[in-house]
Length: 630
Ligand SMILES: Nc1ncnc2c1ncn2[C@@H]1O[C@H](COP(=O)(O)OP(=O)(O)OP(=O)(O)O)[C@@H](O)[C@H]1O
Image (tube, rainbow, N blue to C red; front, side, top):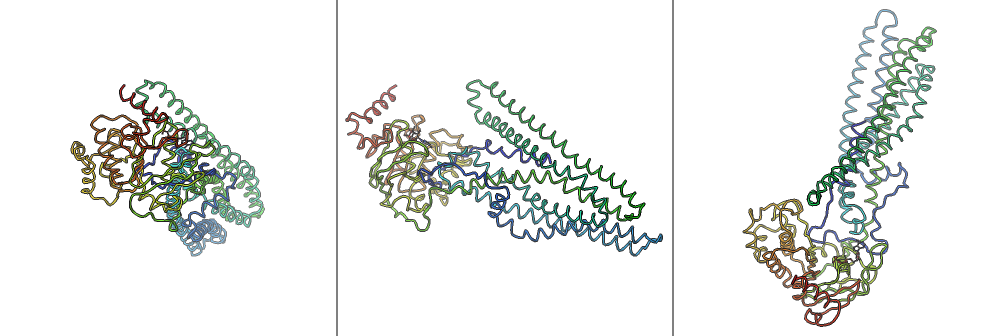
């Protein structure tokens, strides 16, 4: 029990232990999201669905599990029936083989052989049943994980944002684990146990209805009490899972935020938080184990009382010739078969509850429809060549919020370089997300090459439109592997050439291991500026026709600044490029500047013209200039 409880107790671990930012350097990472009023409402969790309906729906998603289940069940029946043969053989041996006073050796040998065959058959059936169950369970869990993982990627960014990313990871990892024990043996065990209980009861009744009545009288109160204890246990283990989650959150946060903790000398406060969480977890565990310690011996105590009663009453019945010696001994065997399902009942019920909770959370992911749909095969394929973009009366509001973009009308001709500027919160990033179809507008439409973005198939969209986010996510691997994300088929020479064409050959040579240089987790071994260089090289290799750049705000050293400008020039050459600009130079070099203010496009034109007009851009420009001087 405790081992299983422990395994489920850790199920919230993932919700805090791992946060997976998923930006891959290409915002095409399954652009999804209907940004309409219904968009981004978070994941569904259908708490109203009954436990049985949840299990049924969950199993319907994993046909692997249902396939061959009847065969497995048949094996389970063989394993159960096999156990019944032993007490029958014992009864026959005593009552018939030893009846005359002179043992009937051939009869006894036959009974023993039947017994041995039954034991071997039972063991074999149980073994094959377990192997089949493990196989079926593992392949259905793998299916669930893959489906869950794919679906998380299909969900809109708004839906993803409504959940902690770690919690999403937990749903496709730990929550799936949570149902594994139940699938492996719990579900079948309920059927087998009920069968065993029934068969044992029938046979006991055949041997002696009086003794059977005694057994039921002993066990009925326990059967009534068990579900109550089970609820108590379930609550205790829920508390354990929550406390374990809190503890892991505290520990992982203190490890991830170690630099900030040191910088602000808050080690003591952090240690106290961790200690409190560890203590709370310990208290919850102790409470749960105390209940386990009380509940588990109960069945054994009741069984001992029942056996004592059977012996006493059995002997009396024997004296009055109401039961034979063989039947009495066989009855004692049968009582153990009757008790063992009860002993596993609490455990199975606990597992069933965990499994239902796990299924609810997984189904919560799978039942949430992706609100930005891929038109798929029906969708348009964008022709190659620099892309033109148009926003027509575009309006956008985040779910439950006020409009953050209003009445945006703009045309971006092919091959032009556009800088998008504005105060923080003015709607620049939202504009970029709509352009990459991470979300759809609430009103109006966005077109590329005359096609409504909603009608363009994802594969084409991803190939032709690439976004370089502010802090390009790097994976733990080498520089080469990270750049290759832009074009998985790229050879090493192509990657080298790309870096040379972007004017980054000298930078590459300066690196300790060149393309083999490890970038560390999330690229932490590189500087922020170098990470941007990798993101640009990646985008260059992807060779899109429309490039969106979210310029990094972090300051970089002058040498990297020069490299970045050079690489940027190379990446945007010959393409339509839209940059969310945080640097004066980007706006100055753009063909056109789009100025956003409080969700509206308030000015547009070349830098040289805009800077002369009084307005938002002139004010922004003034603040850039003064920041550069200070
Ligand atoms: N996921 C979200 N949910 C709700 N509101 C959001 C969300 N993302 C952005 N907003 C709001 O939308 C408005 C526009 O945000 P946006 O990120 O587009 O601005 P921005 O101009 O890119 O800002 P910055 O320069 O700081 O990145 C802001 O008021 C912001 O608070």
